[in-house]
Length: 311
Ligand code: BDR
Ligand code: CA
Image (cartoon, rainbow, N blue to C red; front, side, top):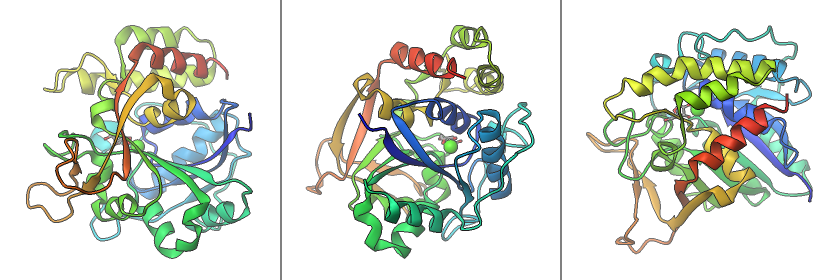
C-alpha cells in the first residue's frame, strides 16, 4: 500500500503538537508539508512552534510555511488560556534548525497539489482561513484534494461559546466556504473529541516511554489535563481534539460516523461559529460531511502510545 499523501494545516497548540507526533512516524502517511494558521496563538508563534516541533521530531525534511495572519473578516481570537504564552504550555522546544518556505502556505499547498500524481488529503486542525483562501484563489485545484479531514465544530456542542467550537468560532466565514466547497469532508467535532479522552493513568503510560517526543507529549498533557479536570463540563480526562484527525486516517475502524449536511452560522447574534448539523435530516439539504460521532477510546490511546513510542 502506498502511503497516503497529506498536508497538515495547524495552529500548534498542544493537541496539534500531539497530532503531529502521531503523524510524523506513521508509514501509512506521507506528510508533504506543514502549514500554519493563526489560532491558538499568534501566527508568528504557531509558525515558530511548528518549526520547533519538526526539529524535535527529526523531520526537518518536511517543508513548513506560514499562512494568513488572521481570519478572513474578523479580529483574531487566540486560546492562550488553554495553550499558554508560547502556545506550547510549559514545553520548551529545540531551536528550529529549518526555515519556513518562502512561498507561504497557500502557494506551497497549491504547488504540491499541482505536482502530486495522486490527490492529496488536507488535515486541518486550526481555523480554516488558509484552506478557504486556497479554494478561492485556486479553484481549479479542488479536484486535486482527495478529502479535507478537520477538527472543528460539533453537534449541539461548543467550547468557546455555548454553541461554537474554537476553530470554527475564530473564522466562521472561512469554515462556511470550506463546508460549501463540494470537497469530501470528514469532521472530528466536539461530540467525538470529547470522547477521545486521555486519562491521568494514560499520561503515566506515555511518560514511561523513554524518548524525547514521548517525554514532551507527557509534559504537554500535564499542562493540558488540569484545564479539563477543572471545567464544569466534568470530563475525567483531556480531550484529544486534533489527534482525532490523524487517528481517523490511521485507524478509521476506531470511529463511527454519519453522512449529514453541516452549515456554519456566520450571522447569529448569540451563535456565530456554530456548526449546524442536520442530524435528523430535516432540511432536505444533501449531506456534505462525514460527521464522526463515536470513538473507541482505549483503541485510540493504544494507537497514540504506540505511535509516540516510535521516536
Ligand atoms: C480546537 O481548538 C484548539 O484550541 C485546539 O488546538 C483544537 O484544534 C479545539 O476546540
Ligand atoms: Ca488546533
